[in-house]
Image (tube, rainbow, N blue to C red; front, top):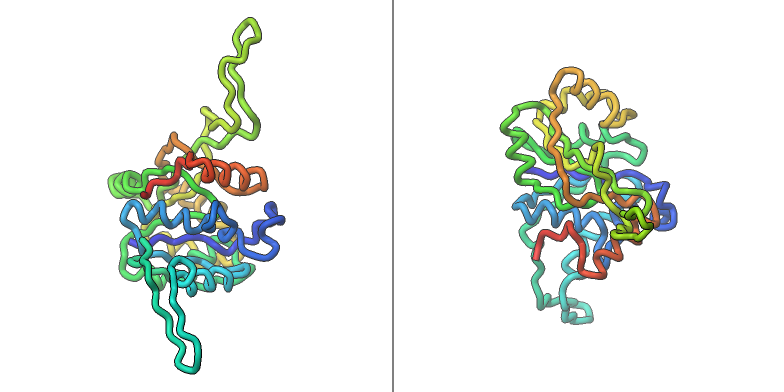
Length: 261
């Protein structure tokens, strides 16, 4: 089962980091957020990835082209018969990554349609954005999707709070203080979709259309979209403060999305 990740956006709201690299390559710790997303899926056994490239896609290609060099100790023999010996292994050696150029200006619906050939004969595939992490139970979301039989499943999450939240008693004593709580009411699209391959019939001639607009709204009117509720951690990286938050959680060893050893 393939995992399709949308990696082509320009990330204009995070201009401090995305002027010279695509948003999925903005780091959490010493790895790009894209790597963290892929590790989430891999921890559930899904290791075949299709990356929809666009803005500065060559940066993502360079990252994977040089992945072995970047993650291993190496002994190099210099000279006319140059050679290299890699001394260490990494946990991603059984991954396959398809790097598909879907156009710099293409909208998300068009990007998905352009990678149809890389889904092969699979009846379904996973789909997500390249800029958000969470401790979503991917396995259960797929089980839920197969059980209801509709075209699309979207993970419905509680949006993260924009401001700190305090519990204050009648005497004015602060009893609980949360820096970035999850909002407990209402849900939004958190990505981490599961889609049947017949979704491609709704994506034709959609190069300038956002996936979340016309295609998903049409499927919704037809009763073909189901929500998989996720009540745990979920956090996009849309702003510099969110970038700092995710890096702080990772540095402190408190990253809720880290489902791998």
